[in-house]
Length: 99
Image 1 (cartoon, rainbow, N blue to C red):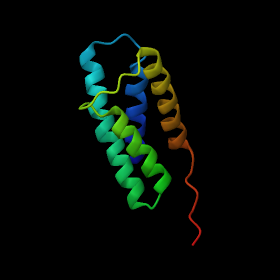
Image 2: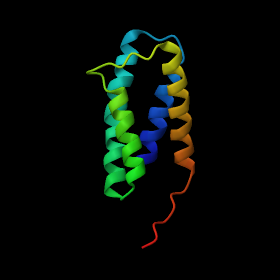
Image 3: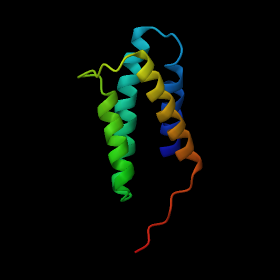
């Protein structure tokens, strides 16, 4: 399920590059909040603190309640970086923790 969430989030973030109606961007904010919150929780449960912080920060950045105005170009850059990062994380194997 973890990889499915990442792929769906990456797709909708890449779709933000197209000229979409404003309602789509509202949907992306809600989906991003929920998706990244789930990923942060799962990372916490697996003991991956760095991933938890990254996903938590992305959930806060995309949350729809207190909008962060970055401008269209900056949001596009952010969407591409996060989308590529999500796709890379799908294909990379996590390192085993040494205890």
